[in-house]
Length: 263
Image (cartoon, rainbow, N blue to C red; front, top):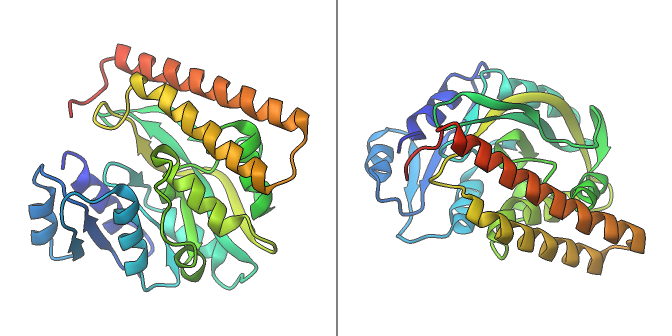
């Protein structure tokens, strides 16, 4: 609840006006359900407890517009975000999705890292399968969280449900299902259109080992279904470890600055 109203406001303040906003609560106990119920916005309250995968799937399937963006409760979209991605997709049927970067913010809303995401990728047109392959080789989700990805509705709904088998890579498995197919093209924009918040209520240095395990599991699945060389497999494994170490260092840096919020 601490960040929910800010997230909703970031949608209501978009410069693009033709937006359908639906809220889905998967069983929170912090007052969010009451706030959602009283908001006057389209909403669905799921029976507690509900997994993130089920909550995300419900939200995605509620969408009726031409394009779909999923925003989690503590993240933000900047005012031009929706307008910019609609412009990249509207009337350009060759693109199945538009992907941008995001800033990383702490519990206070201060930016601690700018323009994160799309590592190894350039502006403009890209093959969806190549983007997913970069995630494999880099050992991390180079796409980012769902609020910086605008899908055509039929593309993302066709990839439902969100796959929760690897909870910390919930987004990666579904990105792959939607984008790692022949003929799929995406539009990339190396500019931040929103912010992803890190806080003690959602992340901890204790989770880094589990995140690494799940990334390696996702990479193993990728290797079973794609042709990869021995050199690429070594590179992918090494990069996954490097990325895990970088996350640990980042979490410790943020904690040291006292910018974590209590759960």
